[in-house]
Image 1 (cartoon, helix red, strand yellow):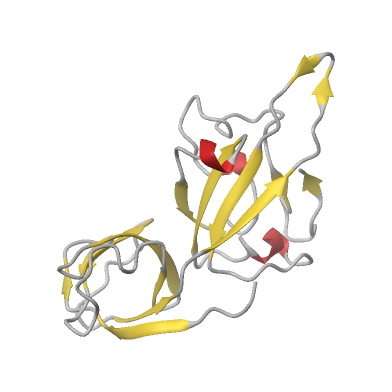
Image 2: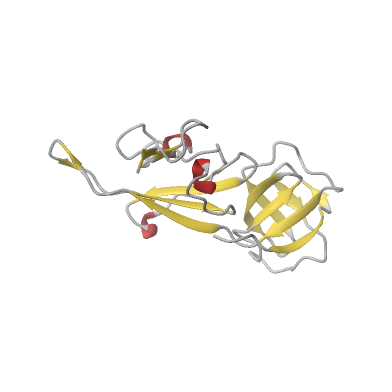
Length: 184
């Protein structure tokens, strides 16, 4: 992935909560226009998960500090999608489905960085889905990056692949001193 492109910037015009706020009249009044894009306020970035014709933005996860009407924002163009796939394997005769970890991040891929760049640092949001195919991604979990890739720590719902610490887990860089040591 390359550098993110700044598409728009301005000052928040109204605030409902730490995850819902309104952008100024200079922004497009088209529903879903910024859906899936990254918005940065201060040093934190989040994923825009809803955008209305009234310019109301919903982000996930919520900002830790509620934005104010003097908060400057920057919008960067849509999240990049990454696919992490393991070699198919079996254990003691039990065939397991081959899961693929799909990630959305505004960060650049960097193989030698902790979290492969995709999840490096904790100041931005990522979205994750663990499924046997992209079409099988019925639930995307959106979270503030934990600094590394660990499907078990992403918060998948009970019963969904990735919710348990089992052979379907995707894990890299569990400590800052290890880079790219994990299992895919």
